Length: 319
Image (tube, rainbow, N blue to C red; front, top):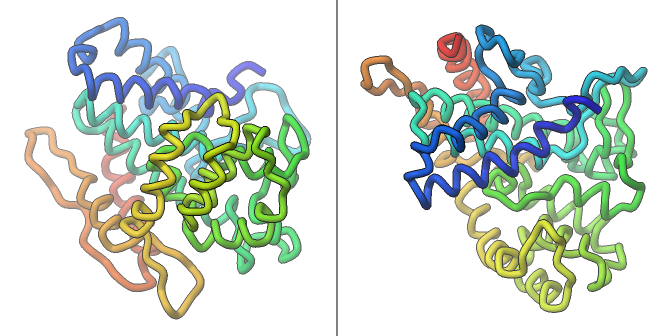
């Protein structure tokens, strides 16, 4: 299991560390603390080929535009990815860490680029609406892939076959990155076709994950009613769950727009502009704008073009 799931587990530390520095800026000058956090980033997402201790991008696959969780143990089914939401959490954390520590501006750019690309990949291949073009129609009705191998997709998890596990593992932890990945349209389909038909007992902590990760995004009133008595998962608090429920729908209103001519939900103009204009760099401290505002159904293509253009120009500067 060596190197297995590092990009899942380390994200919790990186996000928490970035929040700590935001609240207590003096920790940015604590060499032992910052070295520890940056070692976690180098282990999973090292951008430098000159680093003699860690390989470049151990987890992230720049062809598939998401990470693989398998370590050094081979499998006939190839490498695999299970909890996409935990990967997004790490990339979100890298962006935050770069922002609060101001590491030349480039680490924040790297995190933003990888996060944007991974979100689009997750929406295309892992979180399936009924009209998904990449999976057989009957399989797409599951709405989540489960364990996504290189050679197959298995509607299961490594720790069990309960529906709550298979869907819930794609919903934690609750961070702004999750808001970008889980569109209201997807959540509505997943709730209507699968999750609303589950028992969802108040005594099962997985109920709190299902409610906050899906129902809160489409029906905050019903989600709040569920959480009055629901047992809370040990990675969640009741206060954060209730805050999330009361803000999730508004967050999606700000981040997403749905076109009238297609069922695809795309990143909104404001989100695209924020992403594109945040990709800035210059050795002398000046600013260059790498993106322009776009609209309509070409968001995805233009986003990919601009992100990859940025990547080609800037990524080698880490070396």
